[in-house]
Image (tube, one colour):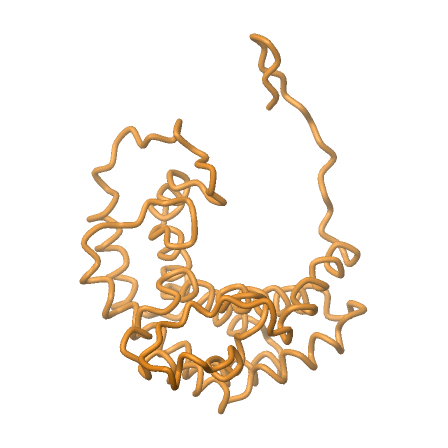
Amino acid sequence: MVFGGNKLTAQTHKPILFNKEIASKLAALPLHCINNEWPNKTSHGSDSVTDHILLPHELHPVFYGCYDWHSSVHGHWMLVKLLKTFPDMAEQQQIITILSNSFQLDKMKAEAAYFSKYKTSALYERTYGWAWLLKLDRELHEWNDSLGRQWYAALQPLTQKVKELWTAYLPKQTYPNRTGVHPNTAFGLVFALDWANSFGEKDFAALIKKRSREYYLSNKQTPAYLEPDGTDFLSPSLEIADLMTR
């Protein structure tokens, strides 16, 4: 929509087709950054000088690239999704090499251990990064492929740790985060509920639904007219609607 004077004019655009050409352009982004450590924002809460000076790859042996942890996670998700959709894409071997290096059991155990290793590390990437990790896990689980099954198995220590963290956190979260950026509660719960439903995690799904109703069911006249905020990359109102339709 374009505003001109007192008129509102609808503009039409040619739809973008999701094909191998587009897939290659998308793949180029995480292929460039997954093993690229710099620039970096670790967001690590230091206990002492000993861990304060650790490099990103020393804190996170898998998800250290792409500037921050959650970007690396959803970069991995993108590569998995693209490879599933276009298994013969030109970047196939490059993607397989990078993902095979990432999805190793010892590395994922170290990623999981991070969340219990430091005083505040249980808060790390709550809940945006957690959401993308479950999205990645679900993508691998739903892929009928031998490599996909191998990578999925390697990811399990971290997946189960994230589920544990979320299960502990949700009963304590009194109010939802309604921002239009990473900490948005509804965004995270959408991915978490989809994961729980896919895996038959009935207790986790029930907890998510209970808290979602407590947060949002009585909401009326959401102030969508204030959106977007200058920093928003998602709509708080639409995220709530998306969650509650589930």
